[in-house]
Picture 1 (cartoon, rainbow, N blue to C red):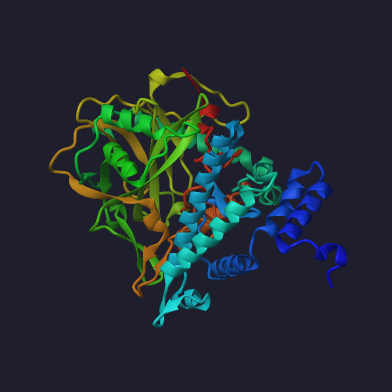
Picture 2 (cartoon, rainbow, N blue to C red):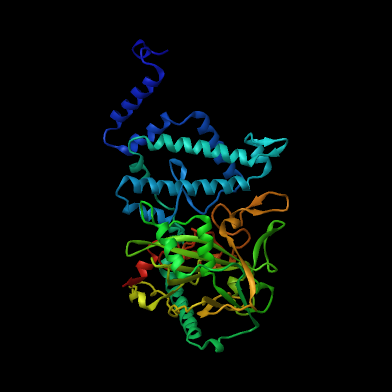
Length: 506
């Protein structure tokens, strides 16, 4: 029963009194204060709804791992670039812009999760119309609830301070695995083996293009889409896209597609068997498969920091049916294979760096523009950055071309090429499609599990051999945001400081 001293306060005033008591009790600890304060503005109904939605997503294994939830903020997700960017924010407009981007990451991830929920799970949450799952209704309710949480929380004191304290990204490396596997001992032969691979690659890169080893037929694939933007148009687009509080080149979906089309590479593929024919990813029953009749590249944008300036990157992802054939090491063979070819643009819209990896995160290499560098940073206790060639200059009408070997699917040359009409056309698709692929039953499913590992695209032999390196599911195809690129030490493909850690720029 409410005491007489409290009866005189209306309900809303009593909330205010309680809030002030919390503030006083918390004293200077804004983080502890914030832990209690949001509960005053979050309705129990919305809390219950999001709790049930989150639990259903986890129970059905459809959690999207392309970005990372911020603990205590169920309407925000982040990535490595946004975490690093937060260290450079010093005004309110910048903070608001930063949070807005994290808010968008969460909405995008939740929409994919809802698309991938089984029909019965959507219905169990109370969203069905005429016996059919109402995903649009569920998405709308999710947006309303998370928006209500966000508006309530950001009005509380200590909001940004609490948010900054929880901006961490989970590691892809396991210290426990490294301890159990005697990592310091096993890292020595791994360094030696990696150095041998680098020397082998360098010898191939030093060959004339016509002398590169070939075991099948060389087939050229080119971008089969509309006219590209010229360099002046790209520069203007980037300048417009940076007109936000943080100066980050942030593109709309339409702008992203135009820029991705402009830099899409020509693929020169050595083809021996079906395992060399890249294409669209689809579900074949419960297994991932590649439709080689529909050649395709998937793209997504990322950002990095070079000399404290945010730069734009276009990631092109290629998927093959298998890693197989005599070129590929036996421990690496398995279902579904792929590589990522990333083009980084300077503020004028010119490519200044290409870096490449297999989609497991392995065999990462840099191809920088020589004129952009002062030096390559030498490493004291690890291998130096692997730079097998310099980035070629592009003349009018030229594109970057990549020569890929059969079976192992390694890039053995990047060159400037002029597209020709005889090339087989490939389509350019958004990477988002991989995270909500249509299934035969009308539902959708991501090609990655909730840990960010390709379903049925693991490499059991590699996992055993490289267990001491501390990377779970090492060798398996991985989702964006989960590419550990070093076996010895730690390194991430999406580390915003990756280039700065390896090069000194002019």
